Length: 241
Image (tube, rainbow, N blue to C red):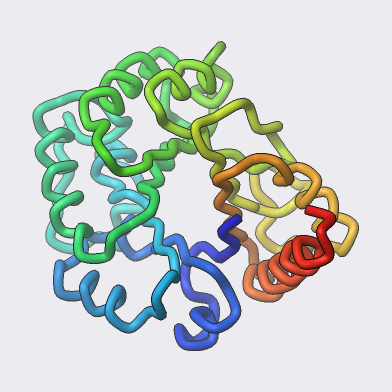
């Protein structure tokens, strides 16, 4: 089990020392440089796992407020929503090349809540087209997340349905990718701090589901991830996992 955080909530050296991995967030807002990716890979200890949140040009349509933080890229009407357009496919080729020096374990696609459910079929075609050796995970939100049989269709492609397991129970998958956004509230509750009981429930959910990536994405992500990792490692050492 890989336990980590979405982004670096503390100094990188401390994160490298205390956790198993990081889901890189900077790759969502801007296309990365190969030099930056190579530098991160070089400074991280052997065995530390990077996953990357895929650039929003592939997942978010023109007009998305998240583009306010983007430099050097202007989306077209044919970008976003994981549609199998020439623009998206060429952008994926560039993104995969730029991130290759990082050696990502998983590429995570997070689509916005305004993605129409009728575009799920196109997204599946996009994922089928780009499917290669890399592990892919998709976290749909809004109506797209409720598409019937989505997890099963993704599993047929070898792609994981990324979920917050406290909000949507995981389905059989080629691997498991959990993004923890807090309990209660709406779709996310970033200010939530997980209790010890919550973490025990999470371990029960994750137990037996391997390979599993567990990434916290809340205000207290570092402390919660460290506590969960210690719980998981402690039970593993005692032979209970």
